[in-house]
Length: 86
Length: 414
Image (tube, chains in turn yellow, green):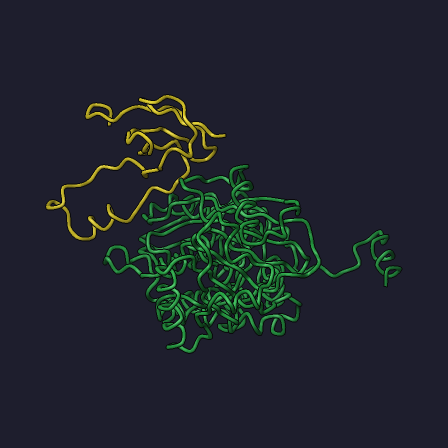
């Protein structure tokens, strides 16, 4: 069974979590043209490396960040989001 | 016959001719370099030579041909899609497949089985009705059938799903749905291309792409630099490696998709059975194994590992649909890489870099499109302009917010 450590609930089976995609910065909608906005909306970094991702603990409703190596599925660390650590 | 087979096996030298040559050295220059020796890349090479007379082509593969998605899919061929454009495209592919064994002079075991997409709710019956009407409108053989028809055609099925799942209330029935031997599709396209003079280089890894003045100049490989003015990337799950080399932004995110086969059984299941609600599609191969595939793994992962979770859940769904499988053993399980786009449609054709063409985003439905991809990409490369069947599928569609609405038909069903 694969485990993921929720910063609030501790180590839980990964089936209890929902993957929320990579952590990305949204450009100011008024400051970019349509093409740049399309780039933000649709395009992703699909390259295999260690990534910062949003994860959601479904049972308790906690959103947090996991750093995960998407090549070998190893979770490097997990922590709650706050303005300073993004 | 067994005696002949024994003699065949005892020969010191392999008695069959090789399907294609293995040139030991890359030349300095080719007209076209195709990265990726899967079905799509090899079919493109074949149609470039056959339809457009372009034979100075090299196909490069970092491993062996057909070792990626081509050899890992569940080999289902169908055209009952949701949009008119999607149907026209896949129908062309089915037509090419139906004649492919003859054209390439090799038995691909292409067999029409009939394809059932099961509905477990009124909502999914509504989608089936919609798909059937779109299909009929453009001349594809599809119809909605009730539980009685399903039970008559597939007597082993449990319409109640053992009480563990919502009961089956109907299905979208697509009689031309077929399966074929997927490895053979790669081999024969390789042989066809090779006979026209195309070079196939296995174990040749692309390490960089040379771009000068927004145009392709060649590719760097672990066997040296090769000049080429036209380069196609047809590498499925490895596309993000290639696009990073040239800083090309795409929406591709890669997920594994897992599949398994049971031990071989005597033929009992003629139809291809798909259930979107149960995330399962299954058929019995010509070797007798029951082949089953799931939906995508739920998070990004660029690895071909397979999991116990998958085998457990798939076995459960198998038994829900076919209680007769309860004592059958699972023989193998594996995963393939699916490069996914947000609109469940491929990315094909030209890119902002002149001479660089892309064929990607084929996660979960690439095998059935192999011939039509080869044909339309060969046209695109020869004329430097998208073939009319793939104009919707360009990379530029995302910048224009013109997505293709095919999600309902492609996200699960095969």
